[in-house]
Length: 283
Ligand code: ADE
Image (cartoon, rainbow, N blue to C red; front, side, top):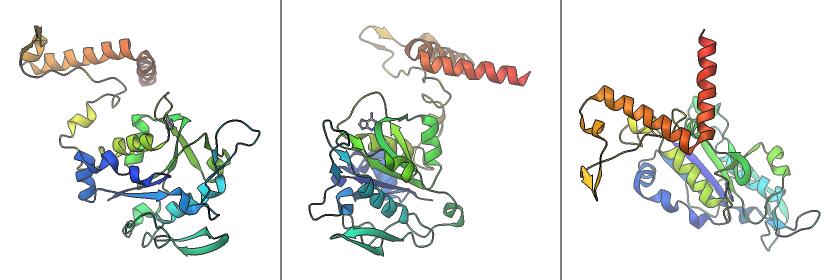
């Protein structure tokens, strides 16, 4: 099953970018995931291809228009429709609302579109995510859910952001990748896709490296070491050279807990809360 990513952006040339190489690049070449970068400007209604306007109520910057975003999202959703993966979309062409084939109306890409879907995929609606610092912080748990689905439509913000009405109007989930402000949603979209792609079946070499790592059990991962045993006067913890696997596992668990407690008290609190709750539920 291929994971389909459709990215709505003013800068389609930023994609696949780093996802064209290494693990993700190889996985895409193998058909494990597909990418369509959709130029938002193609869904503007005027000859200047305007996608934004001044904020209602005044203020600095520009805001992405809900009507333009809606046409782009409808187009992207049509690519996920059952059957051929093609769909009928409505878009503005020189001021006229026209109906046309979704893929032939996508001049920003030569992508052939998702292949015919199976019955299972037909019933799974594709999530539409808008990258914005106002969104809910992305978690590994959400990434896991997304990676298990048919794919994602990702909308990248620019300027001051999105007309708020698009979120309820098109069932769009607002997602932030952290408490930092990027110049646009594109790098955030690349991060989100990278996190999903590495979880797809057959993408990561050693399956255990995906289950023991940070966040998969609600904690930070334990520290790693490799040869040489001594480097610039610094040595490897003795237990890791003991060959005693039970002792090593216990040390790693303790390190994971101590580091989480010190570095991420927020994660630790949540982890402890969940542990106490499950212990009291078990009684
Ligand atoms: N766009 C700008 N900043 C962002 C952030 N922190 N997360 C997601 N999208 C963004």
